Length: 227
View 1 (spheres, one colour):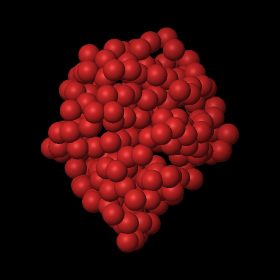
View 2: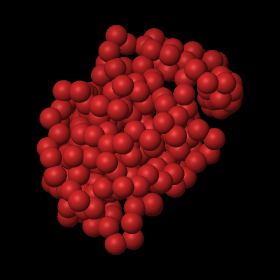
View 3: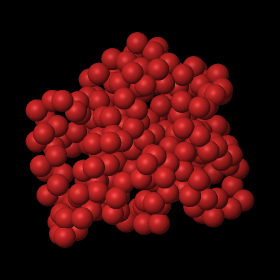
View 4: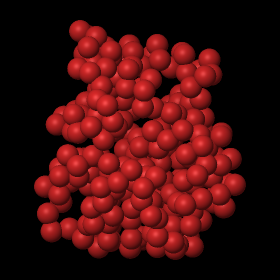
């Protein structure tokens, strides 16, 4: 299994068995996924929701159970992922947008909830500092941005230790080593994670009134930020 020439083509390839693969290659994936809905404010009732880098719709599926009357925008660069979502959510009030983050025009003061599950780590530190103010502006007052992802600085000693643990986790499910070989190359070429402390600082600089880590295991983390 070889990586593809673009990120969208990479996830087209990955789309067929996305959930099964994510469970087996991402430690705590299901816990991080459920955190995106479990940790929302108790009285929170969003009417417009943006799933940023929606993949095959796993986050939206959870949100639809909790907020069935909301309007959804599902954004992803992979046409195959968006097609999976269309087949998964027939009849729902969903707008599908094929776009990279950098090419999407974020509407101002529009969304009540923006969610990102394992999508922001594809943005480097400069791109995160560019997009966080856009997310803030896109939210209505009282809106929430919630994110689950890998959060570690690539050049840190912690990242090197993480790679060893991560390899062991993946190889436990795929002992021939081929899946890890692909994932390690994918991580090197396409992943740009940053430490939570840095991201919290950038979010606060963007105007968010609070940023709280609600669940974490080592560098696999979930946070919520409010406007």
